[in-house]
Length: 359
Image (cartoon, rainbow, N blue to C red; front, side, top):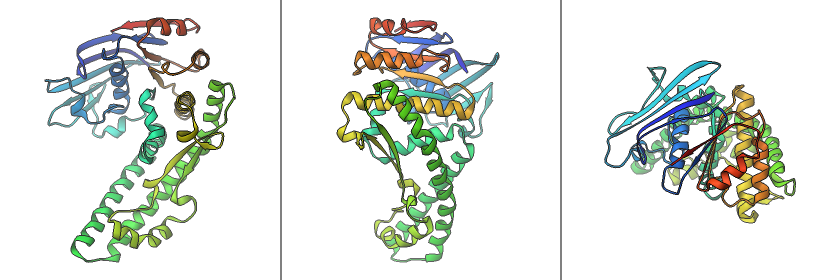
């Protein structure tokens, strides 16, 4: 899948902007605040129907405007695909593929696989478990529509169970049969989600280790650990054991909605013991592993969006990353950077065609 043309209207800082992209490496260069990251985010938006950096649609509209439009023209196997994402304040977001509006935005996910590597990924290390669950789920859903449906239904059931627990507390009442209805649904859906996540980590972990070894020259060992309440006990038993706790807390305290990923380097949590360079290398390896996994599952080469990845990396690690993308395994690549010379020096090392787009 190749993005040939991108058109923006009232998207973030752009009033109107058009780009024609090359099929391999596209370098977007400009000073801070010019909108380099916004261009990559628009490309991401076309794949996932939402911004990577700000999922609140209204906040992606240019100041003092009422709407935005992102228009992308792709080429896949010599067939043209047109995707348009538009949003107007007070209305629902509209996503169209070849002039046909999707009834459900989720039906679009996976059509145009994409992987973004950004400084914002540091949230995966520093923030809470929800951020890491979203990463894990975001990889799985690009190749597993059933998982997406099960996950969305599970989240709805948890919200309904939580509302019921709050109702019981507020009215000083309790109906165990009502809770059992939600428990049964949570168990069925949760077991599927847990099994899918465990299988994903089993496949994904070795790919992550391979990429980190390539970036770090094998000097450190990394590990990805899946933490889940369901790793040690059946879900229905967990819900029964924690019912009193749930009633006091007025929300569901156990389940796959509490799952987490533990990132380790040389056996220790990377958030506490990894240097800034090691953490950035880990995140890049994590995203390159995501690329590999999606490509293998979908049999389609994802777009690769590299947002300011050269910052805070030493020259040796930059060189390793460039070597990784210097082969036909990768398809179309977008690189944003503030330093033209640094970017040009890097891309000149590869044997792929490249274009520069200046802001």
